[in-house]
Figure 1 (cartoon, rainbow, N blue to C red):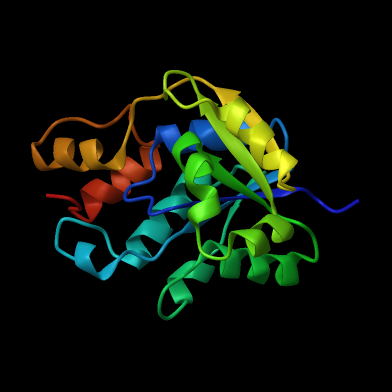
Figure 2: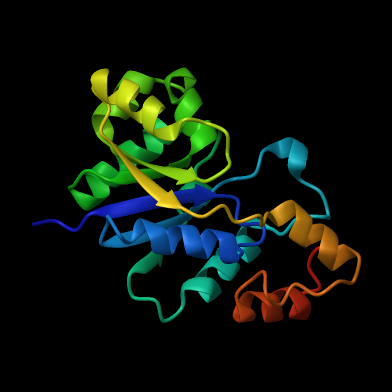
Length: 196
């Protein structure tokens, strides 16, 4: 039987413990989690952010030694807009299996408004994360979408109030982030003077 692999997309600028914990929870229903750093929209290109190469390097550092985690630089190499449906199609061809795609409650709510949602529905399974206190009825929305032919698994996890924007702001203010990012990532940020 083919491995069940979940794709975890994000800018990971930087990757933090919230991302790592979410990926660990995904392992309760899949064999592996593949971290997929996204391309950054052109309007966000400025000195406050890490480059694509640096973000990929931080992901690699965060998952070193974790055999059930892997990464892909596919979206960083795509020219032009990168739609989820095209990315899923790529992984279906590459892996010869149906991938899972990890989404939060807000994305699950809006998924039928994404680019070519019917095609996306037929290409992959959805792992929807029910983070307590998000205020969105994840299970109710998942049941509704399943009636429309989507394949959705709801993964319950605690609410973790960590985000990359706050971490970048703490770094810029000279505040510690040692408990918020993997140690190797913190060392990389310091060494490369990122987010100052």
